[in-house]
Length: 249
Ligand code: 16G
Image (cartoon, rainbow, N blue to C red):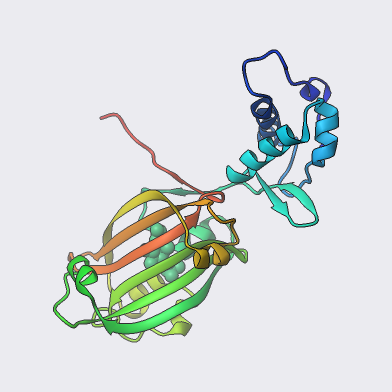
């Protein structure tokens, strides 16, 4: 990183903590694209010498920026600037495949679990199923240009979506539902909340222990109101953000 002139200065008399001042300066160099995605950050030692602050202060600033998704660390190599976060508009009922293609990224899926079993009480209630009706439980790791983005667990009634196979799930579920089964997906209700992933998903997503994710639950219905799917997904909060356009009526 080439920090220019006055950027080398932190104000030791300011009430703002030094780590925060450094954090803001590094953030500025990323936002103004002085530092580009993939660029290496100077070492902790170099930063501590240039700014005349302790390495602990530098480390604190860097850790905060890693946790906020601006930087990422690679063992033995250093700290680098992350790519921009993927932004998804919450207005449209789109599929993961459509979202990624719209950004010119190559969508990918890795099937982690595929099972057919009689729905338990909770899922039965959400999907308005009769007793003992069979459902699919599908867990997929979703990727963009081979980078893990989300872990997605979906429940769908077998009677509504017959013939689903691991092969089909390697590409788009919605394409199969709409093009092969000729069903019309109508609307969905979705919630987003912060959560901490379990150890298994943390490994799939390549994130550190304790790093928050965006937990999204979607209930999707066909045009005629029949419940189609219940999906719980953990999205990497360091790589993904959701956008909502709001209007004052
Ligand atoms: C999205 C949907 C999910 C749907 C999937 C189908 C969210 C939070 N979830 O990930 O409900 O099952 O797309 O994707 O947006 P596909 O057609 O690419 O398999």
